[in-house]
Each structure stands twice: as C-alpha cells, then as structure tokens.
Image 1 (cartoon, rainbow over the protein chains, first blue to last red):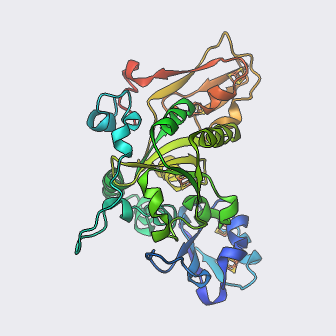
Image 2 (image 1 turned 30 degrees about the vertical axis):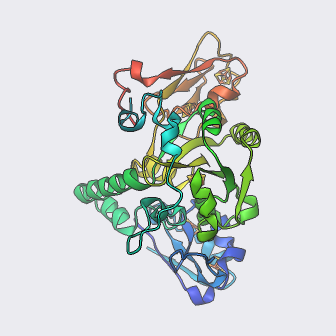
Image 3 (image 1 turned 180 degrees about the horizontal axis):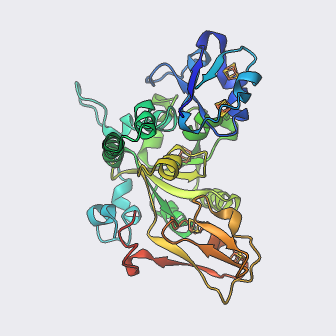
Length: 78
Length: 278
Ligand code: SF4
Ligand code: SF4
Ligand code: SF4
Ligand code: SF4
Ligand code: SF4
C-alpha cells in the first residue's frame, strides 16, 4: 500500500538545518528539495527548502518521522 | 560494446576514455536560445525530488504495467540524451583523471536530498571539464562551491573513495559530454536506487563482471560488504564468496578489497548472455 505523506511547509521552517526526519526514516522515504527552480547567480534561500515524501512505496508507516518532528509538520496515512 | 561506445568511442577502448567526450564548449552566447542541454541537466533536480514521481509509483502499485513501462522508457530516453551514468572501475577512473581538466570536488546532490547533508561533509562528486568554470553562474547546483584539484590530488581522492567503498560512475551533462565522476552507493544515490528498486535504467552497468576464483578464495568474507548492487553474497556451504554475474555492475570494489586477489573482472563481451545487458 502506498503511504500518503504530507508536510506542512509553514511548520517546517528550516529543513536544511533541522533534517531530523530525513535522518530518522529507516527507509529513506523522505527527500529534501526546493520550491523554486535553480536561478542564475543565485543560491536558494533556506526558507525555500522543503521536505516531501518521495519514495512513498517504501514507507512502512512506522511514524518515526512524525514523532521526531519538532514542528509537528508531517502527517503519514494509508 | 555498449550503445555509447558504438556511437562515441572514436576508436578508444571505451566511450568515456575518448578525450573528445570531455570537450564540451565553454561558451555559447546566442540570444533567444535555450541554454545548452548540459545546463538543463540539473543534478539538484535529478537527485532531488526523484527521477520518476508519484504517477510512476501509483501505476506500479495498481499493477498498470503499460504505464510503468511507458514512464520508465520516457525517463530512460530523456536521461540518455541529457544526464545518465555508467559504472566504471578504479583503474578507468584514474585514467580519466589524466585525460580531462579541470577537476573539482563538489557537493553531492543526491545525498543533500536524501539526508540534507551539509555541503562541507558532502564533497563526493567530482565535476570535470569546462563546465566547472561556470559554477558561479549556478551556485545552487554547485552549492558549497567547488574545490579545484590537480590530477594527482584527484587520484588520491578517488583512491580514498574506493577504499571507503563508493562506486565510481561517469555522468553525462548533455550526452556524450561527460561532466561528472560520481561516487555512489545504495540507497544514497537516486540513480542507483531507481535502478535497483524499480529497474529504471538511467544508470548503466559497466563493461565487466566480477568472477571469484574458487581455488584462491579462502572464505575471509571481506569482499561481502563492498557490493552496493546486491550481487555478492557469501556461501556458508562452500565457504566462498558468490557473485551473481547477472546482477553484477562491474564496479570492481570487491576485487580491490580481496586480500587473496581471488576476484577478477572479466569482459562481458565474451559472455554471450551478458554482452548486451546494460
Ligand atoms: S512513517 Fe516511517 S517509513 Fe514512513 S516516512 Fe516516516 S519514518 Fe519513514
Ligand atoms: S523534522 Fe519536521 S521540521 Fe525538521 S526537517 Fe523534518 S519536517 Fe521539517
Ligand atoms: S550520482 Fe552519486 S555522487 Fe553524483 S550526485 Fe548522485 S549520489 Fe552523488
Ligand atoms: S575477499 Fe577474496 S578471499 Fe575473501 S571471501 Fe571475498 S573473494 Fe574470498
Ligand atoms: S560483485 Fe563486485 S564488481 Fe560486481 S557489483 Fe558487486 S562489488 Fe561490484
């Protein structure tokens, strides 16, 4: 069964420095990306980084990411 | 001979040993035209949010083989033109460092996406060729900057990566132009992961497969941790390493670690069933 993973970006302020969920997930399901494309001569600001459920086929529903998230930003359901 | 060698080897033993494939143009100033393909091949995106998205995973889940096949073929075709990789051996990586310049270490997009690894701990990729002179134009792709290396320094770095157990892979940026000498593993590399978990082939096998000599192997087991491709296991019955050659990617990491020199790489060209398995 495929998991539905949602991350509330407004509750996840700086995933680049937090990254707790990325490190705890035993299956490497989550991914860090940006919500803007790459732009010439410009580095993406920290607030444009986002966490998403990428490899949702691998999610077991263990909820470790949900529990560890300090901002309560992640929801996992099946 | 793989498709790339057929098309781009220019008489060299492998396509990635042909210096012409490192000679991408440095400047292309034509107004009103899109950036050349290499610029579109954004490793941040490739490593970032997955090569194939939710649509693919959902099709897989409901057993929609046609959609799975179509999406995989589209991804493979687009990768082949823009940004795709092939596994090479340590010796080949060292040869490459003698034929191309400049060489620079840079932050790995896959690991950044997988773990948010900070750039100063994340210099796994080697960028090569004139593209490196343009990194300031795309600071996000080359987050953390680039660290230029002399060929000798680069060889040391690559040998260390090998010791660490990372697979050497060449990557194109606008095929056939090679721009990356990557150091990958499972499950951290997005390309390798797509290949092993979903059979999507944007990451080709190398030209050889490994063979264990049962006479020389003493069953020490040191090679077993080296395989990133689930090709190598240990047979307690025979007290020998066992390599599934149909699964082997020919990276040679098991061979460089074997204290008995019991593992050799053999050319797939001489093995009819494997000769065209990429
Ligand atoms: S529920 Fe568990 S497996 Fe799924 S994303 Fe969260 S940590 Fe990973
Ligand atoms: S643990 Fe929560 S706040 Fe931290 S990066 Fe993950 S989603 Fe964002
Ligand atoms: S292909 Fe390998 S080295 Fe290159 S970005 Fe991905 S994991 Fe990093
Ligand atoms: S490292 Fe060499 S000797 Fe040891 S088990 Fe592997 S093949 Fe055999
Ligand atoms: S068996 Fe050896 S050469 Fe083949 S993929 Fe595994 S480590 Fe690489």
